Length: 117
Image (cartoon, rainbow, N blue to C red; front, side):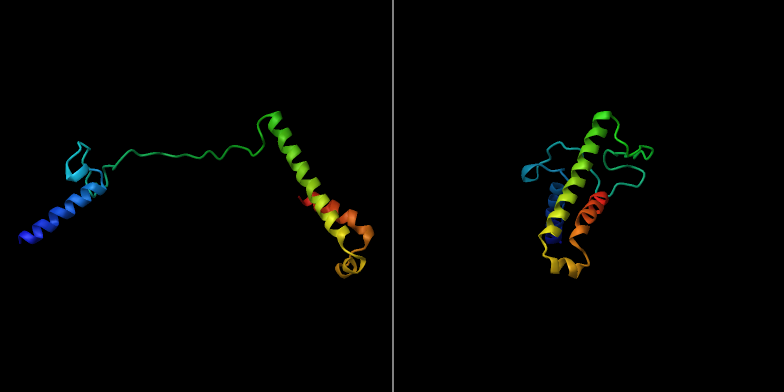
């Protein structure tokens, strides 16, 4: 019987340390005791409420942010154009023919890639 009571006391000390009720070496550090299972009508700690507003538009608010977005988009288009043109131009005529592309189509294909970017 004493053996079971000792084991239960050790488990309570370990559980108290996990929940922040006990200080070093099992001494009570003055922390507010918390029940292991709080009743449903009593919250355990501070509750945080979060709300998300969905009536915001995706349009940037200021002229400067719209300008930055436009410049960033234009740079992405130019990058897509240059990369596509460079890669297709690096292919020889036989590889282009295998893809169903002629040299005269490279500019048009690069422009279409830029519009999709």
